[in-house]
Image (tube, rainbow, N blue to C red; front, top):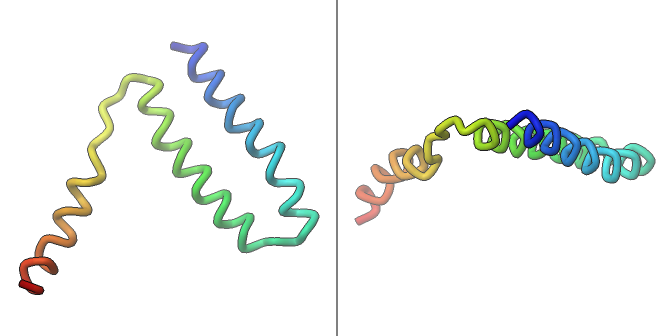
Length: 74
């Protein structure tokens, strides 16, 4: 399991090394911020999966959030 965590970290580091220098060179700060947010979100979702931790389904929260709106629109 430790090997999978190391591979995951190296994979994300590779993505960072390939993408971030170009964004910094272009001074694309907003894009860098968005990239960082989604990269951290992806890492936060991937790590528990690698560690065999049960992750709640985000569809349940989205459904609970929009169900009252869909009932109201009917």
